Amino acid sequence: MSNKIKHHLTDDLLMAYAAGTLPEAFDLMVATHLSMCNQCRAQAESFDAVGGYVLEEQDETVAMNDKALAETM
Image 1 (cartoon, rainbow, N blue to C red):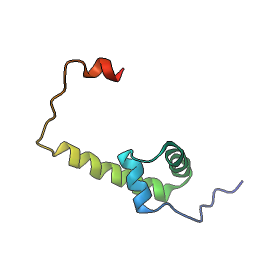
Image 2 (cartoon, one colour):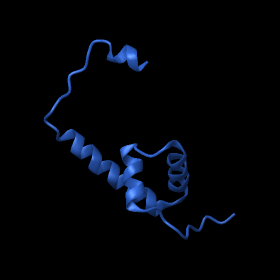
Image 3 (cartoon, helix red, strand yellow):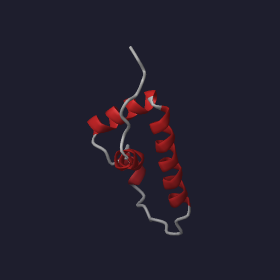
Image 4 (cartoon, rainbow, N blue to C red):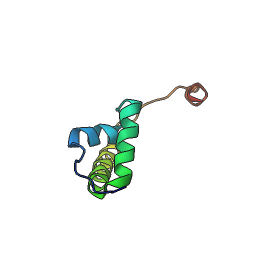
């Protein structure tokens, strides 16, 4: 089997993957592609870094109720 990637993922798809907004089937497809494609993986990592920076720079906090952890579990 050849690992020569001939097609790459779009920026929109990679940004949605980084944001966690893709449906499960697309998420799996993107993760599989990223495991084999250095170019797309580097682009996805840059979107992750930008998203992380934006979150870190937010001054706004969100109050959570006392049951939030229990409800999540």
